[in-house]
Length: 222
Image 1 (cartoon, rainbow, N blue to C red):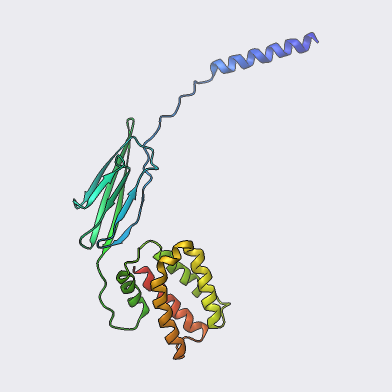
Image 2: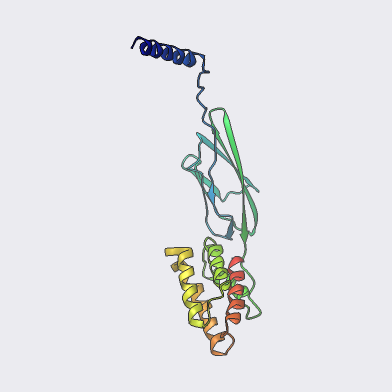
């Protein structure tokens, strides 16, 4: 019993010495870190929103290139809005400070003007024209394009009904409730597809695949 007591005292003493010899834990200082949420494409006149409210920062400073009177910050600089009067490339630089640390992020927004009136029946020309005409948002266009591309890559769709069903399911999965925003352009596409089917231009899986990829190309131009 005396042996075990001595052993316990020895272990406690060793633990105390190890604790005293260990380097003290230095708390890590908070670092400035910008988390920016913003779209990268827009149309002339469209309201572009910037959000850095999820950043690790005590203050923010913004710079636009070129300088613009149509850029405005609010909420202590954690949010901003911008609307371009002309097409072009606009650069936004935001700096955040926290203690003696800083972080800087550069973000580019490509602003497009109205597309020209299409001179052919090609869907990849008409889709961006319709999107601009109906003032549809640029957000969601890439997801919708990817949806059409995914359906076009399938080899298990035999008849037109299969293609329509698969596309409907894929589009809902891609955009969810936001799919209703795209109803005007999807209706226009549907009108064209119906005419093509009635004229025998949209019957086989290969014909569908070519048209679906053309639709995707048009959506990526928005």
